[in-house]
Image (cartoon, rainbow, N blue to C red; front, side, top):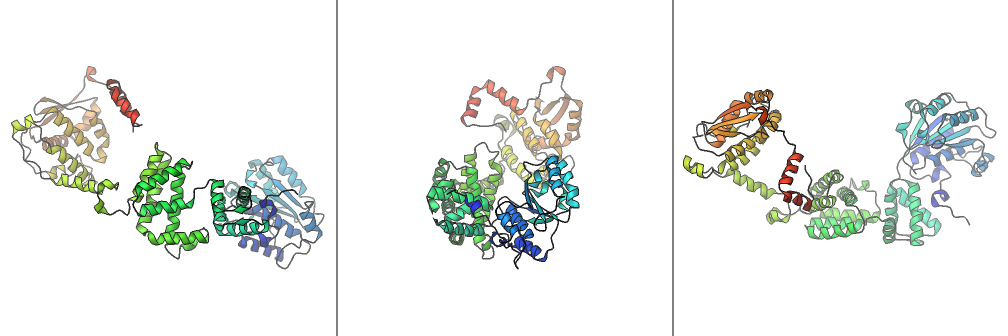
Length: 565
């Protein structure tokens, strides 16, 4: 006996046997009962949801000589018998994917002129109509607009947006829905009972989720699983056959995260990856799992879970142990990981860090920063450093021997603080609030070294406001030089840059006076001589130059697999 796959063997033959499209089938049956038929219909929706099947049932019912009171075909008249035996001359099917030229459409249009031999209508079913060429659409347009009274067109497509608006406006449009997991499970149960196959409902739920809303896909996967399981479809065998990550892993990971057991999560992750599963798919699946747990916390959102009854109970149990804040934070972290996963050069490390952060969400603050939490205590440590009192200024001769360390600490504090306070004032003030942060008149005449000057120059450039970012970037490549203490000289490349710096010259001088504790500092700006001009190196060129001078830098880069940002 010839074997027929389940998708064909259990293909619906009546409107009542169509799964998951109750609203559409009711509308079509009412049209058959009332006799109020349009000349063109467009069935659109995802693959495997019953578009072509409904088109055939509708075409059969239209030509039925004795339709039932419910609008179904009688399956007894000559028209129904000829359709069932695939010898009907009134119903034509055209696959537009392979017959998409103008010639094919013209041949089809010629057949519309011939009236039906049996029944009232000639029905033309054009599948994958979006594959027609533009010229074919145009050739089809006139006939579609004013077809003969005995012709009805039924168009089917998975991509409605590719069809010309002039075609859409001439059709009644029916949007088919995706199959829900519940509907798919129920239909698979019906097929399994017909075939005498035993099953676990949880295994059928896995098949339904894998099908992603397509009943044809679900039946194909069901046949595959039935062959692998030899008539007894179990959850474990379906997981093995389809190579699907067991949902038990997701429940286990969330339980471990709630217990802050990051080390056990790393062991579990290693086992999952060693089985061939991708870390990105794990994060996506875990995010879906956490979303389901969040939906299970509220009875109003519980119907949103497209899972089996057994799985729904497990989600509810885990939802009782998880607080909403943990779930929200976990979803946020996994969403960020999903965004960064594709461009990450170390994907596994990104997944591990994400899972560690999730495991630390519920960790008490008293356990310290070393447990892997976000650096809250590190932030407070910097705060304490910034709040330390400024050391007493040393005498000039002591400062000359040992540079004062306080400017470095103050630079750290003032730069962060001033970035927060930075306003919309567009005047030429390099460090917003810097002059106000220190008391006027306490600069003194302290000595400073070339290293101190370069440090404060770079710190000043880093603190410059956004509206001066262009000149700040150029100033970072300049090297101020002490010509005769406290006189400073800055050499620029051209007159344009010199003019830009002179516009903020007073602010630069005042800033250096404050941070170098010397009110006598002056700055002279001059244009470089031809022999002094040097090429400004890019970051990559600077790195290559450093690597040539010190090969150990390149070895370090290779050892840590670093990339130049």
